[in-house]
Length: 62
Image (cartoon, rainbow, N blue to C red):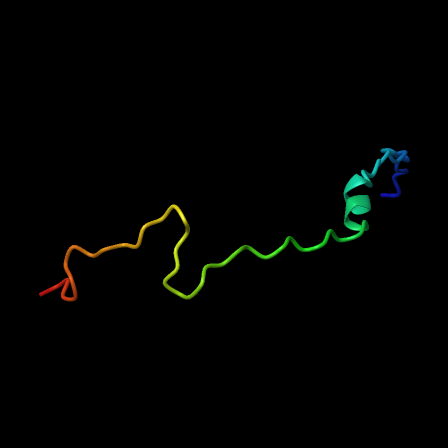
């Protein structure tokens, strides 16, 4: 029952890390972009966009 086991030499694998992502994450945060221009009031749409006119008027379902 006392069998001698043969020794298995462990395999060595080389690991290379890519540090480019972590270097980008450690750089300074760029400033926020300037706010977008807004129209005057809630009903103001973009310059190219006309107001939507409903073909049903005030009662779309009746």
